[in-house]
Amino acid sequence: MFQSPFSIGIFKRAIDRKLVSVNTHNIRDYTHDRHHTVDDYAYGGGAGMILKPEPIFEAVESIKSDICSKEGAGVLPIILLTPQGRRFTQQIAQELSRYRHMILICGHYEGVDERVRQHLVTDEISIGDYVLSGGELAAMVVVDAVVRLLPGVLGSEASLLDDSHTAGLLEYPQYTRPAAYRGWSVPQVLLSGNHAQIANWRREQAIRRTLGHRPELLDKANLSLEEKQLVDRWKQS
Ligand code: SAH
Image 1 (spheres, rainbow, N blue to C red):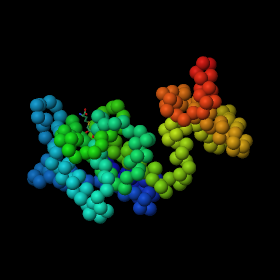
Image 2 (cartoon, rainbow, N blue to C red; image 1 turned 135 degrees about the vertical axis):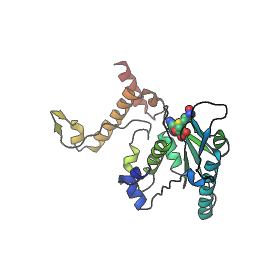
Image 3 (cartoon, rainbow, N blue to C red; image 1 turned 120 degrees about the vertical axis):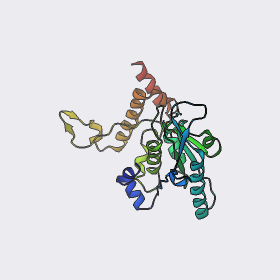
Image 4 (cartoon, protein in one colour; image 1 turned 90 degrees about the vertical axis):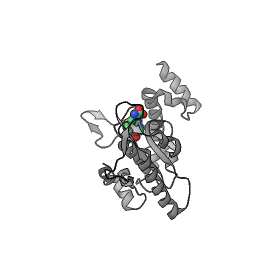
């Protein structure tokens, strides 16, 4: 499941250039019974299987001690993917991009034994208010968002600054060639070559778009007084 996303595009380049490494571990390898049992029925009854604590603890402890023996003990986030965690945002991606390592735990079935959450993990992340069948896609979402922030991974770091959710605004509209398509023209200002005017137009469009799609984001965006007045005028019209 993890192979194809990590074997193409930006990811593959980042891995090939040793800017990042992603290792997947199967908790079945940390079981001791013949059937490699990783799940069991829920105490108290109810439908669905629960991931047992032992293989998860043993897997994480073994991976952790590998990392520590090579690199010494540092802060190592151990993150459980769960719909009950704090909701993943660009800000959390930025925060995680500062760690040298992180361990992500993917649940499955009905979830994981509560003792994993209580005594092993240091953080719980949800990628949104919906329920997936497993934590794998959620883990890939987190890893993708974090890896593209690492120095050298994207061609141009400058392109990160304007990304939606980075400066608290959604990104301005983007166009490429042709200048006219089916009679729909690219805004004239973008063809003008006037960089100051283009920057102004983009800023204004980013604010307008944020107001249209996600007005609640504007409360936290760093708007100048004039921009705030502009927003008030837009709201009234
Ligand atoms: N019964 C659990 C949900 C289990 S879903 C509950 O109600 O909380 C199975 C697994 O998928 C979870 O253990 C978790 O690892 C993963 N998962 C599901 N939805 C997710 C979400 N929104 N974000 C992150 N992980 C999620």
